[in-house]
Length: 145
View 1 (cartoon, rainbow, N blue to C red):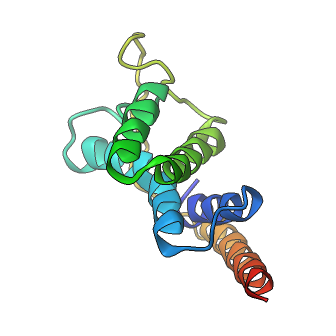
View 2: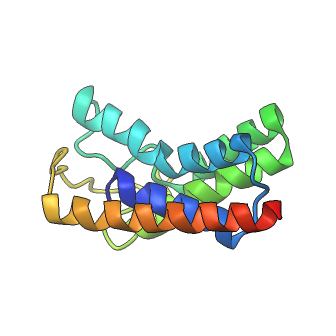
């Protein structure tokens, strides 16, 4: 999944899990939904320290450690938002290779395909994101009444 798809999942989670409509919570949820790719694709494709784009941040230990850090810095609601976004990312990526227990389990990391752009997939995910944002704003307007 690409950036628009991960953001769409995060915005939808914000609605489904009835988070408060504040910017801090939404921001943490959305950054959490992108964090595994930001970390791993930087390490794998830009710094070339790993063979692909799913390794250090695409596992439950990074999820739990980063969530504990967010709770310590921002409180339980912030940690819950981060955890929700991060978990959503891992779950929608789980149709392909995810090293769930790295670094405590050895994995044969597949060579990544690099950062690619597929216009049809990007268009579908962008449409999904637009629909999720519309739903978010309709819900937010409803809650403000």
